[in-house]
Image: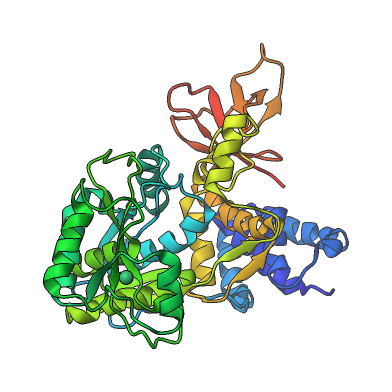
Length: 471
Ligand SMILES: [Zn+2]
């Protein structure tokens, strides 16, 4: 592998200019990795890098600037996407109305960051409104703590949530919409045995409930809501779609069902729970979302919601679908993690081995690092299969770049507890004692060479909450 001396020099100059004239070999290396340098070649190329760094450090900042102007186009040649692609149909004066809609089965994790962040970034780009919507109309799949964790985490990671709301607080609206759909003869209450119904629908045949009179449908709907009416599993509100749809799952899909499980937020107040397609269509119409970026596994749901929009002649938001990161060596599961926290395998959602926001935050990842990674990936429908190692390698590079721009560099020497004037608290709660001549201010971010980045604790200025280890 031959690395061009001029390219090394360009990165050295860039880094020196970002750091008061002194370049860091690690940063130059990470730049060169983007041009195909492999880890095996590092040892060979390192003496050359160091020689160039010495030359660059020796010249004045003015001289560095002048020379960088000449060489910076070399860096620009790396294949990187510049900023976000434009969305279609944006009214530049009004901006966009977008949303991110997690379900409260647990706190937020890596998967949420990617979909949510792209929505958030487009609202930042065009201005407008960004809603956080907690989709909690399935009483069986809720972790009560998520009601507090999700909004707090969303504020930290996105920084532009205008309003947060819970769907279960809007049940009246969903009931109203359900009745309107029944009124339009586009929904019916089915009391068939589920096996029997499936057999009919698979053969594109209507069940006996489908063609009953409007009066009978409204009575049946009342009987769903009435405590003395149908029992759990005895009646389902279904949308009348095309029985000849090539996908059986699209035919007469359910809109609402009876579920007597106690809801963590609403208690026993409701027995009929709307399913996601009804609530999502209701909210998306009422809030006037202009653009939706969602995970591509919701493609069929988007089609179902479009059918509901159609009967009200409502304009559909422009919808984009996103592929996901499939980790080969990392399972992201709220329920499994929760069980392991209970068993004591993990210390909590912020256990640094976990892919949840609480843990990533504790390890020092900055929201801007995710932003950079997401902008680089852009709106891609392709799933990406990746190992944790490769994923975090990219994220770490972005995170270092972000931290560097926020950081002061300081000296540090390990000592025993008595001689220390700074205590480093590692993410795993291990304590390290040492001395520095740096006088920290509250919450200031500092960089200790050969060690990494940390933030001083606002309450105890001696305590450094340590974040991001050097690699
Ligand atoms: Zn039926």
